[in-house]
Amino acid sequence: MEVRLARKHGFCFGVEQAIELAEQTLRDNAPGRVAALGPVIHNPEVVRRLEQEGLNQSARLDNLEAGTTVLIRSHGVGPEIYEMARRRGINLVDATCRLVKRAQTVVRQLHEEGYQVIMIGDANHPEVKGVIGYAPNVIVVEREEDLADKIPRRARLGIVAQTTHAPEHVARMIGAIAALPFQELKVVNTLCLEVVRRQEAAVELAREVDVMFVLGGLSSANTCELARLCQGEGVRTYHLETWADFKPAMVAGCKVAGITAGASTPDDTITEFAANLRLHEPLNQPSEEDTRH
Image (cartoon, rainbow, N blue to C red; front, side, top):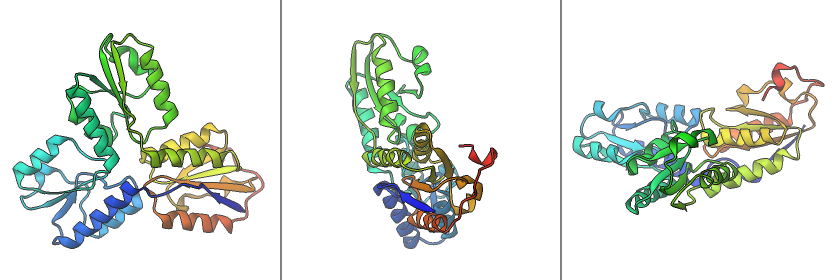
């Protein structure tokens, strides 16, 4: 069948940097002496490979010995982690994406300027958990329903957003916040342009194909957002991690398939999926179960 790839897809510079730093740190240290406070990136394939190379990605600082090297993952951490590591004699290698670093800096500056900081994002995402540590009492909102009870009235509000959110969603949230009584409103754009470009390319491709495949970790926020945007275009959409997750019924009745991938999806995964899909002969009709998004 015909297969088209989104014009922008796969690894971004922040993910590439994190993986390169992880691999270099493993080479530079004795086996068992390198750890990370969670997955370096949200991609199971890469996580498994780094674990096989000796990286413990489920470490806790309070369980590590002095002299251990800890890799700060691409999502970043709060300032308390740096201080705790210093006190415990832990060596840090910082793989935080530079755009996440910028968001951390912006949050601190907004607080110092006297704003009540509002972050548009998922409160459970590691990036958000780290960023809000750079100012006290940061308010996290994800949906318009969150605003009525959380946003203080007639305050000086400083707004930032999780780097992987879609601009349209952030714009709607800012509009809803601006509809509430406020004294002053300052918005700083902390969105990742690389993620935005992938979102635009995915939507563009979704309008041209019969089925979309979004490749990447199921826990990857930017990959989930790609799948949501493609679904919003009304095209049959599947969020898969690898070719092993593919089922023939997914392309039943389809002539043209589109592929995009999250910012933490390896090129090999994308290449293998595209090559296998091009060789596939689709069925005539999909089953009800296999056409669910």
